[in-house]
Amino acid sequence: MKRMRFLLAVMLLVFSLSIGSVYASSHVTLDSDSDVSDVVDRATDVRQRAEERREAVRQRIEQRRDAIQDRVELRREKIATRVAEIRRRVAEHRKVLIRRFFKRMLRRFEAATVRLGRIADRIESRLDKMEAREIDVSGLREDLADVRDDLSVAEGLLDGLEAKVEEVLASDDPKAAFGIVRDTVLETRDMLKDIHKQFVEIIRQMKGPQTGVGEATPSSTAE
Image 1 (spheres, rainbow, N blue to C red):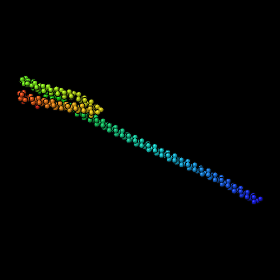
Image 2 (spheres, one colour; image 1 turned 60 degrees about the horizontal axis):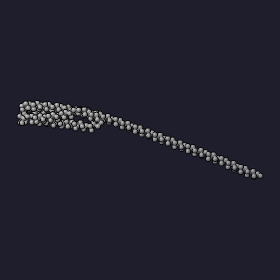
Image 3 (cartoon, rainbow, N blue to C red; image 1 turned 180 degrees about the horizontal axis):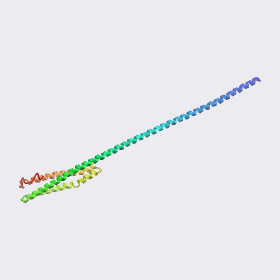
Image 4 (cartoon, rainbow, N blue to C red; image 1 turned 90 degrees about the vertical axis):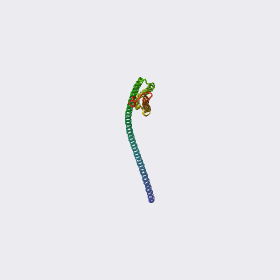
């Protein structure tokens, strides 16, 4: 009987130890799960913070790039403005020079037409005197009339040319519009030279033996 009690007591002890071991094991498992969850949460926080830092860096890079682009564009605008201003000043200065040049040239042309007109008057006066001496000067008068017509054409070309120059300078494409002015000036110049040559030829004929006129007829003075 005592032996049975002893065995029963031993069995109870073993059972108690087994229950304690299971309980302890369950607590260890629960504690391990809690540690894993904490590690996962911390890792998630680290990844999130790292992503936030990367995003912040990316935004700063974009901001810096935008700021650099803005500075570059601003410099380009300033340079373009300065270049445009320089070109405008150069264009205005060039217009001033062109205007002065044409004014001087037109004044010379106008003075030349006045001188040529005086020569024509002197020649005509000489022809009147020659005709009074019964010298046939009909051919010379026709030549003189032709030269006077050419002189009138030259004067007509000069008329309004200064206003045309101003139109050219105000044009959007002065280089293209300048062609008319240039050709008009060149043609007028050539006409004045030719008129002078014709006067010289008339004066030479006035001094020829067929007219009976000698040194008394003006030559260089008429020119």
